[in-house]
Length: 499
Image 1 (cartoon, rainbow, N blue to C red):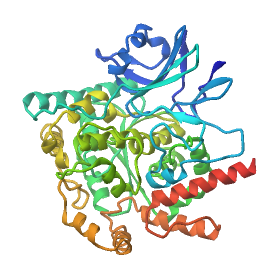
Image 2: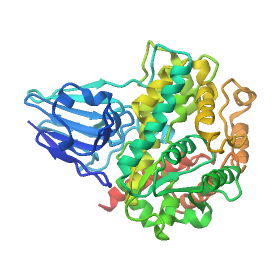
Image 3: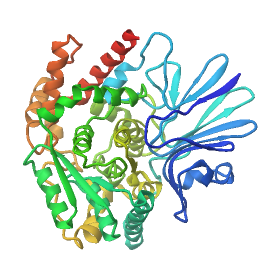
């Protein structure tokens, strides 16, 4: 029996090998040294598990005499999959099936837009969940899975002067890390009307980052677009707006999209379409360039507290109510909100949301994900819930130390906030008939604040396309991700038939 590796990765990052060690991604150690190749490391970094305390986005493999250890980072940024049969264990960047395609967990895929925990839609293939490592015993080929990073901290603290200074230091550290990583290449920041990307951009401006650019996409004249433009104008940075309309969305039905999607679903995540149209248009116009570094604010609001409410929950019941899905992999014995954070981060966020990073690589760039660095997440996971509701502490500190000094202390558009308490809207949703709730949601989706990216237009286009091509359709509820997931399953099946 053997262990067989296929580390062919379809992106700008690439696996490197040095002696018995493989690595992809980037890491900053505690002294802020940057690692990007396997040869940058000492073997003791892995044998002593130092890598588990470093900041960055990576996957890594260490081959010793009796064991093979494989790590993925806090977001499973570079997915690793494994399969065992009678003769070997296969390790790959992309699970694949030689036999006729037999998809499993498709119900999960259409409900939460990814498979759960280590499952994939291929019954014999498994993924390594975010913040986990597996250890393979080379003698008997047993596989053991371990969680080395928790998306929660049990002991909570108050926001005090020390906490605030830690936050400021971490954000300024991001800027230095980004400048070092970019090494003179153009730095692009997708800029919305929210706070996460604005905070990253503020830190870069304060650090004097060179070659800085931004772009915003969505519905023309929406408050979100106007806010982003106002921020870019005040900071005097290069800014590009890409209108999202039927003309832009036509690219969803192009060979370019299908080529991207088929390379980046991995049988466990829905390909993310949102930035695709903007990047394609910027690329076609020659604005994006062949090499660049994209810096996103993905998921920063989650540890900061955006999903927290002030009422108690039962984690499984809450997931079932919110997503219509019965979760199978819940961490028990901790605060239910911490348990929800753990589930959310290991599934929807690390698979469906961070899968959008593949888009930057598809168009020739690399990326950094500073808000998934361990120090930032641990800082806010340790903060008491009452300070995190509605991102209270996070927003206060961002405004005080970054937005106000740069004169970009604009509040994001009303209606684009997540309430920290059980609101009247929550109450109404629970008592109204489901069909009426869905009707109200479809109406609200046409609101430029509720739908700043104009994705309802794409929903209508995709629904019509699927109807014309006799594809299975859900009831028309305006949920683009669910419709897209069903469409993706049909694409996979049709490609298998073509083979």
